[in-house]
Structures are given as C-alpha cells and as structure tokens.
Figure 1 (cartoon, helix red, strand yellow):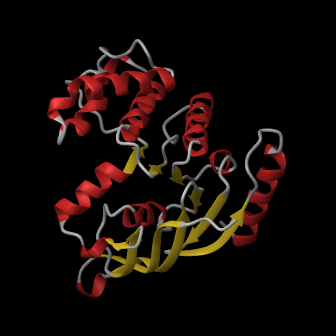
Figure 2 (cartoon, rainbow, N blue to C red):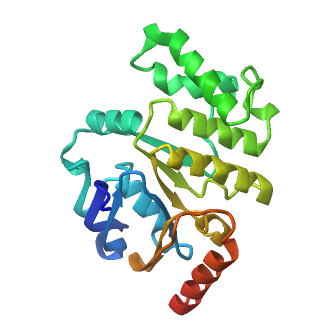
Length: 254
C-alpha cells in the first residue's frame, strides 16, 4: 500500500559561511516522509544529518530547493505562520531537552500549549498528566528539572512534543545523552507513538537506535548516498537487522 506523503524535500541546498567561504552542508537533497513512517538518518559527524532535520522541519530556512508539508511550501510561509505550523503539527525532541530550570516538570510540559489556550489550563494540565502517566513519569509533576534523571527529562520532553497531537515527531540524537537501558526505553516510547499513527524522523549515529526504525537514510558530505528499508520491528529479529545496517555502513565507508 502506498503511503501518502506528509513532508517532502526536493533538491534542498543549505549553505553556511560567507562570500568565498560558502559551503553546501546540504547539496541537493531530496527525500519524502510518508504519514506514519518511522525513519532514521545516519552518517558521520558533519554529513548534514541534523541540518536536514532542521530544514525539513522549517527550523532553518534553506538556500535552494523546496520543503513542503502536506503540499504547503514552507519557504512561502511567514515566520509566525511557520512557528504556528511547527507548534501545532510537529513535535521536537533534542539530545538535551530545552526545559526551563525555574519551572516544574509539569509546567515545562504545558508551557508551549498555553500560548494560544490560556483559558484551557485545566484541560491542558489534565492531558499533560495523562501523558506523564503513559510515559512512566507520573508523580514527578512538581519536581524541578534538576531533581530527575536524564531519561526522565527526555520523557518529559516527549510529553511536551506530544501535547498538540503532532503529525510528525522530529528527534535530533534524542538518546545520545542516555545510557543503554534509558535509550531503549525512549525508543520503546517512539515505537508506541509511531504505532499510534505519528510519523517519526530521528537523527542518530547509533545503529542500536536505527535498528528500531523501518527506513534508514545514510548521509555523507551533504547528500543521501543510500537507503535501507526494514520490515516492522518485532524484537525477535534485531541481530539480522543490525547485520544489514552494519553491512551497509561498511559498504558506504561510513
């Protein structure tokens, strides 16, 4: 069955530097992510992985090509329109959760959702509490961010990303600062989110993370140089999936 395209990039160019020092961090990248897909992006440092995620999500303006979300050209949107789109249709999870130290875990989760819904504090809070229970951090509502573990902080970040029922979650090395068990717990959450219909795009350097996804894009020197499709993850086929990933990485010299 063909999956309807949710977000696409066509011949994306992203440059950094000035004058004669300009360089293409993304060099004509084209990629499409379908509704409900679970995609990871791998590659060496400096290959353009995170830059691609920022370009696809509209967090960075591009220098050439086009990024479209449900057919809407992101470059044609004003900054406030783009911000609204990201806040209401996309969710973001980073390696280090961007939470405010002076707020409780619960207040950090609900803060972005209150921007346009100040009269709905009660329902927003109730949803946040439900998400905290679903992600295994119930009881931490009043804790400060300095009073919980890294894995718990990342779960709080995922709760915040889910508050507005996004169609896609973007994760930039979301498990990079976690130990192995915490990382696998976070991947269990992403898998559940994806199974419920939300598309997920993760940037990772770790094959143990990519093995849980269904499509892997391999980047080098600002380009997608290969793609690997895997069947739905069952937990019983990890070794075979890992062998396919490591073989492709060796083949590409990554």
